[in-house]
Length: 340
Image 1 (cartoon, rainbow, N blue to C red):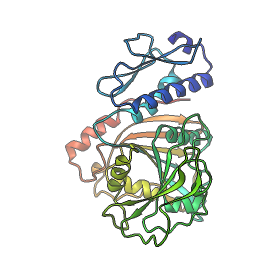
Image 2 (image 1 turned 45 degrees about the vertical axis):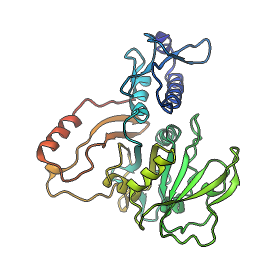
Image 3 (image 1 turned 90 degrees about the horizontal axis):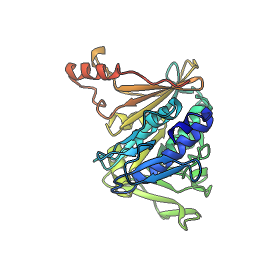
Image 4 (image 1 turned 135 degrees about the vertical axis):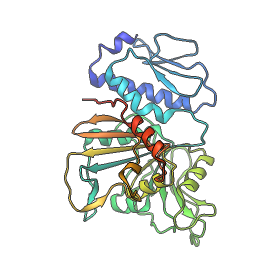
């Protein structure tokens, strides 16, 4: 069956690879999915689950919780698996967090007027929808809701909508924005423990097909106005939202990075020069270049944009030793992946 993959046009192979990834996502929710082998059967449902060793499998789940792929699949399928499978890896941690920023060459995500529509191209915007579909929750700050009125739904690819989580520490957002009344997916507002909710209901909005009201308000225990990202992800994990996608904006992504809760950081660079505008990552600096963080990475072409996929699970501390820096430099020089 693996040979059949090599006969498909690139677009058809990508669509099939996505079906495999959705199947892997569903299996990753199971506590002990031992003996999981995902194979191709073009005569029936495209993706078939086997529970015995299958040499024709495209994907299989190892005992360490890491998804593995066959080396005999087309390059376009292998690249999609390499990009997205880390998000589905089962670890001992209670949560896995990936963040994404789309920026210009000069590291801007918006103009001085706040216009960021759109920095990156269609292929990267589809990538955002893939990240949403593979995640339990997509997280944005209140400023992103005000500036963009985003839908945060999975529309460009097949897959379920993630729960939309909006960081609104002081409960200042009104309910005029689409994420609060579009009847498309659940939305959770996170507030600091001292937020003045007055007589506002803890649930509101239209009733979804699941029978739930669209909007819920959750209080982050013992939190102040900054709502530490570790408090946020811990609360979400306790509520069953373990795979988290921090979509924006730049300040929110930067805070999650500095708090060392990110496992993966995706930075899409578009061939644009903006000049003055809103910066993407906003991090504390280092005194010497040798102390700059150099995470292991891979590169993926997305139309005219280039996506940098950084493994930041061990490099969020700016005060690292020179030996640790040298180790990370070596890791960063591993071969990168390019898709054209």
